[in-house]
Length: 299
Image (cartoon, rainbow, N blue to C red; front, side):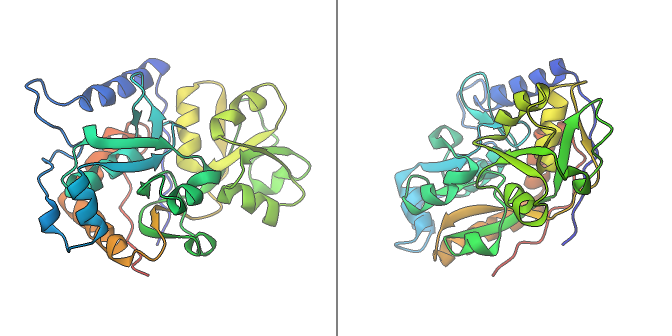
């Protein structure tokens, strides 16, 4: 798998607001009261279309699904003016719901931060998590993953006028903000111990400390930081190249191989028929170039 390094395009704050508003309007359905699943297809599947006793049949019969996602990450999962999240992760979840016969109005969105994604899945508080959720072996001991559906890479964000930090090797002796429980935070702890980690609960909590000099840099995946740069023109910039690969997956109950395989089938179909690209271009594609979808890992 190769990492596609997105090219950041500057958008004004007005354009970013217009994008969010257009996504929220699209989520409201068409004017004649018809249902818009978010993927462009009607949600027509029924429980009888799936094996008896399967998670797919249970969700289809219930007619609703609970999805954990981020609420504070531009481009991927950000709560809009009406309280509903918008972004690429959100659109991926809508594609899955549609294939279960569930309309977007019957998706229950639950905010998940990096530290609570596994507990929410294990405790049954959510059915799936689509939340810039990096697949790794440690997490596979606790939950299952479908995907990946995107490959990101860890990078660094600094103030626009900072010329001292140009990559991870420049973080020694610096205070670096990242989210507790995330793979970028663990990477700093493990591989760049001379940096002083400043942990927070959400990436948006890193912005004010960066502005006021409480920290020198913020680190997480390039696509997340690109959203913050775009939302705050003239304040921040990304430096250096991505220095990890972060395959984003869909988290689900550990050991539910049937459900995992089915979601992988849905993702591959969305790659082929263009729904994945449409989801990207309607959200993150307003700021970032469209990458090639990655190959799913049927472990």
